[in-house]
Length: 218
Image 1: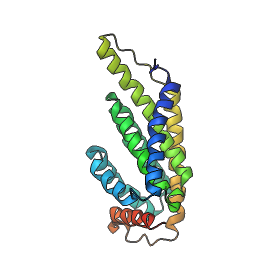
Image 2 (image 1 turned 90 degrees about the vertical axis):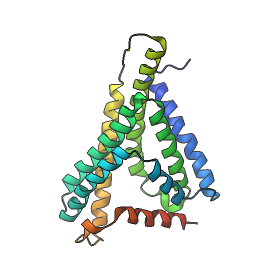
Image 3 (image 1 turned 180 degrees about the vertical axis):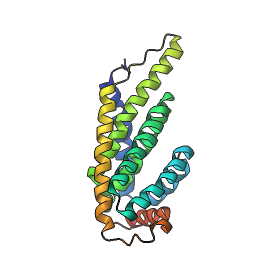
């Protein structure tokens, strides 16, 4: 019987929800059954309206930080965005309905598998390890909370939450390291960019161009 109060067992469950769809996405991507553009467009339609809205709001601070060379503000903006919007809200708070973060994990795994099927898509693997590693750990916490609530309702028993604080701490550390790496990458990239008109740069258009470049990678 599956022990939902065991964080280690929960971690392997979550990891399975990530790795299996990732392998499927990788294979389908290799054979060009699915392309990165389709995954990108569908992901935009499936995005959570609340977190998308807040993320777009925080983007102006990222732009101003890049333009002014304020790398400390950029780091904290990235870190708080990933910690609060993705890890806390979409993985832990939404974990009250435990299937939501599991589906999000599976969808992300599938999409990343398609991206990994392109050679250019394998760059930045270190950033992915820490950033998405933090999201996986957050999913463990969220799903464990959600399952505890679900079981207590089904059994009509007293709710006892056992939050795996070691996973919470590891989540914060992973996201902290991911934010450092992303800040360093953006700082290096900024040396080769004209940032004088960054406020008018269409990030979504630029992201679409990058996605299309990935699909040209044969």
